Length: 196
Image (cartoon, rainbow, N blue to C red):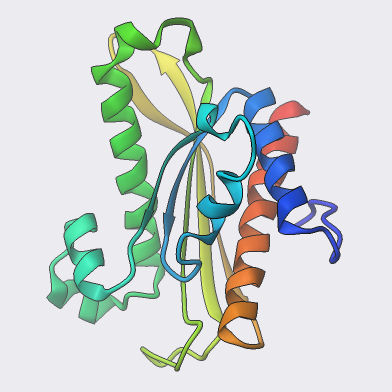
């Protein structure tokens, strides 16, 4: 990561920077959180103007919740693991599919407020006791950036995809905060790239 985020930058500052980048680049954001438990969305919604850039956020935590919201059979989740690239990619895809479905359904009402990009962001990991042969502090954060191109319908057009693996240390809260900071770093890095 090369965002220039300093270790002492507060989540409040990072949230404001993220909303500014999203606004400037006309990008909407959809978030699927597991290990961060809604913390990313909570930080963002404290910033004025967030409603123009935050499409939706969902916390998908238990295995049954992941099975239901991601439409993955429990047996498959047990085989692949709930903290896995398989699951995080489903989290990213599910949010993007909901965004583009809504975009197409409401295309006439959106008019000139149509964003030019969409980011799907997802987190999963282990802040408590080790599971699935993975240690406490193991976290995956994924991001997919889409360009919104208007044809007969708006279809997902992937511009960039990244998936990062982290091994954080500390308490449950410290792991959650570290994952939240890294998620903001990824949003801001993509904002910088779009402005270049």
